Image 1 (cartoon, rainbow, N blue to C red):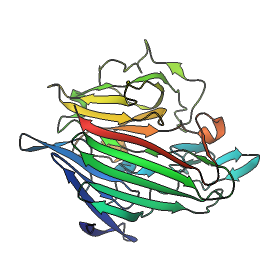
Image 2: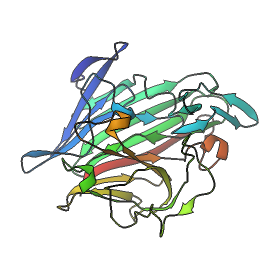
Image 3: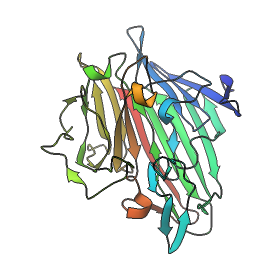
Image 4: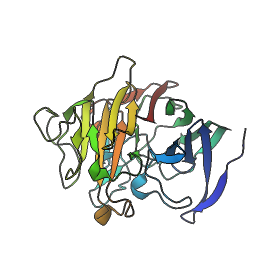
Length: 321
């Protein structure tokens, strides 16, 4: 086992670590805070081809880039949900919209379990929190190979009663150094979820993407597109992977794939003038694998229930076209 490559201070409150992994042409860096994917790139013809947005080591990731969102992804309305006949009131972590957002582990340091040249595994225990009486253990493994990056998540209910669960990843994708407005986006999604613009929560049923501005079943230009939208009815290829593609004009690009456990993706276009995202790059694009849509603990849509001692697992990954 190798030692962490970099040690630095994060936000002046905790010591975070950065782990480098590499195999062949692919290289990635994973941080301990939020188990975040800080960068992924491939060397092509001697030059680095970035597949993700990045941020300087030792600083806060813009817009929670690359971080793991669990034991729920996205937002819970008013921080309130009912499970198994019991009301729960979570801490409000998005005061402007009165929501509980992005779970409990994105700002915590994860434990290093294993660090090899091409693989790093981290874990964290979710203890008892305000409105959350469900202990569980999460792990995430980032591994690079000839086929790019593969990320494996597990969640184990370490408590004595059933527990609700959802997971997302705040992954930002890029196609090398090509500006986002010059790229196209293709998604294997059949429906989109309308959202309340004030609170960014689902409103009404999902709608078919066909013949709408949300139809990305064929490549669509991203110039002028502003999205913060959940997509469902994800269609997997015969190998069980659903592939979502950001493509540059020269035909190169990045594929973000998800396994069958991810029934949703959220697509978000970040505006550097308002979101303080990546001002040196212009607009940025997040394609976020999610097991369930926003507010799933209230709607029940694709909510996962872990029985005591049960372990759940899922995979996703990224590669160049």
